[in-house]
Structures are given as structure tokens and as C-alpha cells.
Image (cartoon, rainbow, N blue to C red; front, side, top):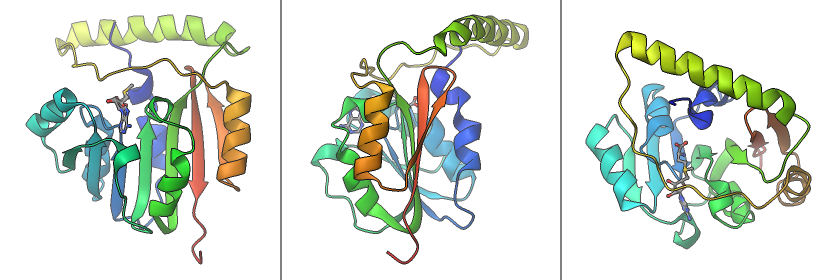
Length: 198
Ligand SMILES: C[S@@+](CC[C@H](N)C(=O)[O-])C[C@H]1O[C@@H](n2cnc3c(N)ncnc32)[C@H](O)[C@@H]1O
């Protein structure tokens, strides 16, 4: 049933954008849904993903971002360049310390937004599971009524292997001043602002 946990948090992420941002990088962009939302807000967006299949789909849709088939861990990112770097459900596909390279690519005053997946159960699952079932039924019913449902191409997925306490500890170590907030649907939001004068 078509309820996407990552897409569900787009609005939350968009509320975290810095006020005068111009340049953005979306890491593990999949078929480009969040990259296009950044472009709609006037950002010049670079969007990358190592999967040829999802990049082909993203390019077919278009919508403004410059898509590139690339593995971020093997790429030289420009230093101090991006006002926003976003990483939706993709950081757990790579070593967590990739965040230090993302931090270096942020312009002073820039914002890193990681919508991440964590391993294991938490006490929130008691609420998340029924809320998830209800949301799936609601989205499915709405799409049936509107006649809008087309099954999306699913980007590559991988199970996360870090639990939330370790993610919090690593974020504090590698990105001092960052904030990690647990979200309902098996996700966390890591927010880091590079200080303007650094
Ligand atoms: C679960 S999907 C999420 C896709 C998209 N961000 C979304 O919200 O729908 C994870 C994506 O990360 C990409 N990915 C995996 N390893 C990567 C890497 N080393 N560099 C960049 N992207 C990577 C995968 O190809 C996949 O498209």
C-alpha cells in the first residue's frame, strides 16, 4: 500500500531549510522526489545516486535538479559549497562518518538534513505500528478515490545496522552541535548547522 515513510517527512524537512539558501545537494536521491521539491523552492540542486535505474527514472521526470549517477563515498565534493545537503533514508547505505565529508561540503551557515533509518525496536513502535497501518489504509483509499495510484519505482534499500543511541553518540562526536530527534515512523532527523563564521 502506498504510504512512503520518507516522503511523509518532506514537509518537515522543507521547514528546516535555511532562509536564503540557493544551492543544494541531495544524496541518494532515488527517483528525485525530494530533489524536485528543493528545485521548486528555487534551489540549484545536484542530486546523486549510484543506481542507474533510479537516475534514469529521475531524469525522465526532470523537474530542475542536475542528476548524476555517483557514489558519494567515491566522489570529491566541493568544499564549503552547498547551502543545504539532504540525505533521505540513504546514510545507512554508507559509513556513518561520511557525514564529516558532507559537513566539509556545506557552505558557512549551511544546513545538513539527514532523514535516517535506525536498527532495532524502540518503545515508539507501540504507537508507530498502528499509526502506520492507519496511514497506509488512508493513503490507499484516497488514491483509489482519486484514481491517482501508479506503483512507483522503488530505489535500492538496505537494512540499517546502527541503533539510535549509537547514532546519537556518533553524531555528537563527528558533528558537534548537531541534533538528533526520533520521529514516529522508524526514522530520525539529524540537523546540523555549519556556523556562519567557520
Ligand atoms: C531507501 S533509498 C532512498 C531514496 C530517496 N532518498 C527517497 O527518499 O526515496 C536509498 C538510496 O540511497 C542510494 N545510495 C546507496 N548507496 C549510496 C552511496 N554510496 N552514495 C549515494 N547514494 C547511495 C541508493 O541507491 C538508494 O537510491
